[in-house]
Length: 601
Image (cartoon, rainbow, N blue to C red; front, top):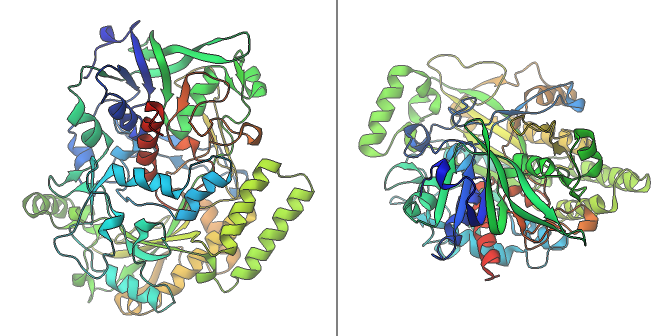
């Protein structure tokens, strides 16, 4: 139920979930299936339920910068990018980033998940996680299946709360994209949800085709269960810290939380556990404000150290991407539908009406053409690049640049590259989706994006002050490892070659708007990327699930080390990045965590 402050302040609950985002609402919903258990969810943002701005398909990106929906985080100036600062938009409100994301919904490669177990987390492997990926979803098969839709129903969930389906409208670029890739040796994946993501495919999206609206944590997990008296949700409640006590042996116990509501500090007590689900950016900040973290960092902030846990806020890994945009020929434009039409106010109204009446048109589309391949599939210099990387890592280890813990992660990443696991991502987007140059009115565009999914660079997220309302310091350390930039450049170069292949060559004018013909050499491409990259909105690692001696923050039961009743349930626990957009994994972690807490796993 939606609560008032009087129903929460100074009250006691069995579980307190800090953060009503994707994983937080999943775990809260599942725990309250037991009517004897009380759960309080504290969410900093507004409820935003039944908000057309969130529910309307194809509205992605329109929420960015709006404090009603977006935290609007920003990185610190990046040392290896000439001081470049970029926005890290994240969802604020019930549902978290599942309320404002770009809808893409899929799973990573099997090897990405098995790596969790290799790093010291027994049981955290593909076979376990796949059960929870399946539990999340109800896949709605398309009424009109086309050649570009590859799936096997045995690998798709059929009884989960979240409805996922293919876009109701295709742009017309899907088949040409697959044909152009095939001409370069990249074929269609049979079933990417099986753990084999190598190839090109059309991803399902989180749009419910029945109600023609966004399918997300708030309207698929919480709202159907909002009447439960034991599920208490308070929005606009910003958690300042977790209140803890410490035993003579040094073990820390969470006794409750302190939170801000309408400018005043309130408390809520906990009987069983505090579950931190504030996301990879806020969760480490809350731990540090609670006195849990690296003692040196806490001391500088003037915070008493309750638990010295050096891994908090470290091992941060983030996806990044950048696009190359091409103009569609005027004499071919009528064959394709792009989001560019939505820049015209009159056409925007027409497309909204069309979707409301028929479920088709621009609002029925999504950027759904995904490609995941090894570097060897897109670069003639791949073996040389990989050899250089291996030598660089080895030299760094010998020089003491990398810790033994980081070496374990690098060893897995290097092995995945050697095994030709899909480390490069590309997306075909039916729109102008690049910068810095702007699109021309009335034109249609195609954008081919390049993504870095398995970075070797490691960043950090730490509190900047004792003020819980001040955003933490975000430093992804972009391009600290040269390989990340090299791979980025090679992917852009591949996309440029792809745009010159048939059938694209006959569809596009040949004019590249961004990066543009003036950007030619590897050095020029690298400079362009440093100045124009965008976050992938997929931060992980800031509270890594790793052995304590390897910088871990939580154990395989998601319990914070040396605490009796504090768990973390969000993407911050992912210890090594995965090649996928993250929402499916956030949901699966929430589902698995609920079963861990219940003692089922």
